[in-house]
Length: 365
Ligand code: SAH
Ligand code: SF4
Image (cartoon, rainbow, N blue to C red; front, side, top):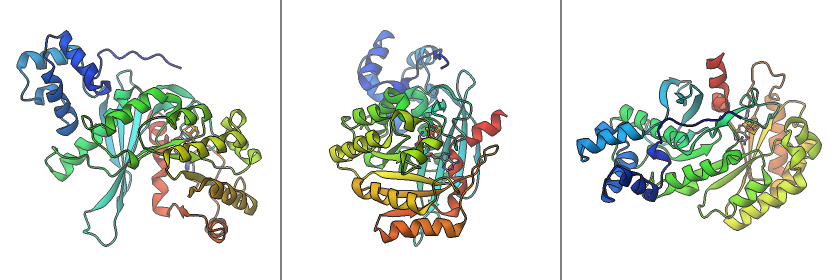
């Protein structure tokens, strides 16, 4: 993995205590910390020059010794009416992607939609799932907590500019999913620290129940996560209902096979009292058989989990494809007969799945 040392520390990665201590190095009193936090997370300004109630000398000191967003917005592109992608460039030139998904809501005014932000936790991914674009080039590096938080702030500012709302209010999205590039639990400390900032009253004050971490199944980290005080949700990328099928497409299954993984997520949902989501990408002739559907139903029942069926989104250069619509329906009807709560991601969601690494790959190529 690449080593990365930011030139200047970002204030986004700091707790209020750390910020107060940092400011004291410049000789600034503790009450300034609260003001700075308000500018960062309530008003969500882009630079120190906008922090109007701070003395000039302090703003200068801050920009000499620290930064806010450690990455710059390179481009924001509407993939469709529904998704918009942001490409961010890190200090070391690495590219990070974030996706904003606007699901239109029926029955309400035409301009209202539920907004989900999908963030990345690493540059690339070490886990090499065979169907995934993010893992193709391996892991470049972890994102810092500041780089994760910065993704939310870039989206907030973009949205505030579009809707011309006074930005001094709650963040303009309804759900947060860690389903962009990378394996969030492989960057555990930075992801948990970013979630703390998202959730904290001094931070973005965003409800933990609307935050979902998606994992390919890192058992020790899932067990550790169960003891974190924050009440976020967990989605497990299952994609195979038996070891034989799962390990064909997910190398991590060799390290943490189903007989270890299932009890770990069961403990998680018991401790947290949260319903788990099982993600299951449907790939033709790989995991779309009746037998897989029945086995999946059994696992979902045991875990009281909701199943999210995702027709595979093609990745250039990879051989996999999604089953035809009849086969998708047949798979879904088995779950239905077994009374498993489940959803099938709609065709509209096609480019939503492209959240997973694809924009970056194309751009770098
Ligand atoms: N590393 C984590 C989170 C990022 S991937 C994980 O694997 O869960 C987010 C989701 O997108 C995962 O369920 C992943 O399996 C899925 N995914 C990856 N490539 C995909 C593709 N081409 N089509 C549909 N879903 C895909
Ligand atoms: Fe990594 Fe998740 Fe892609 Fe697997 S599916 S390679 S864990 S990002």
